[in-house]
Image (cartoon, rainbow over all chains, first blue to last red; front, side):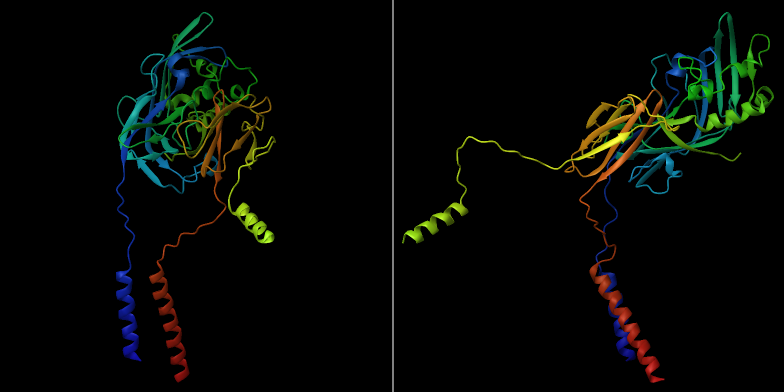
Length: 270
Length: 141
């Protein structure tokens, strides 16, 4: 009996070793994925706020990190929250500060970085709005610089923010489909930022939901000194009321989009 | 004989297709699946005259269909069920956009086993041998 048991063990071990193992090292095709950031025409061309200030932007410095693109199946929807399952992921390792106002009115979305990735349809992206660790933007996640004009008033403005948020979006929603990478070719995936959520849109009715949820420019103008609006991130709480600060936090949570698609957002711990 | 001839002719008719030229009409049909959607803002309000873009799984770059919803955000479309995979429907209007996905398959669940047949036989054999050994152990006591 003992010999028989040993024989069974040996046979089963040998047969297991001889079982055909499915080849996992499949040769894959590669292309290039461009990661871009877009402040849209609001930033490139300027826009009218809900309280009738026309803002023209000279610089919009935004700091981004922990950027990842995903191939998800079934396709990720932002209502799901965190991305749990994906077929492929590609991540950028660095933290980047880019100027969304760079270029002229017809400028393309701003290239953050690009990477060689496996081919496929990258239909989800996650990124974080972070405080810059170095340079002129150190300590700030977003800096808005430009000129604000209303009636006979024209004031330069510099407003810095230090809010940190993570955004997770599904597929880009816009005129074309983005995120498709073919062998040897370039694809593009976009992180979009809707600044009309912050200042409102003067072309829409005052009671439009967008305008009701926006701060406008007037609260920041209240800090005008020597015909200039200059607000550092740590001074925002002195300029805005408690209610306005709550609204600002809510606005930042909705800043990130994928084209016109909404993102899931969550605070990034300081 | 006549009966035999008639029977042979009947068999020939059944076996071979014969074109009959006649003046008539016919109706052909195929089953398609129609969908009705309503595009809404987060607030629950309809998206009036929203642009609707539909992508089929066999061509993820070019739209299968582009249309516009009515003033209530409503839109109807038909999917070709022969094209299997994930269909994506996007709705967008002035800074707002959303999407949904429809999976078209054969409604046949095919569960792919991660274990080969040989492995299953070995595992089964080991379990049986273990049970047998346990029985023998306790029966001796």
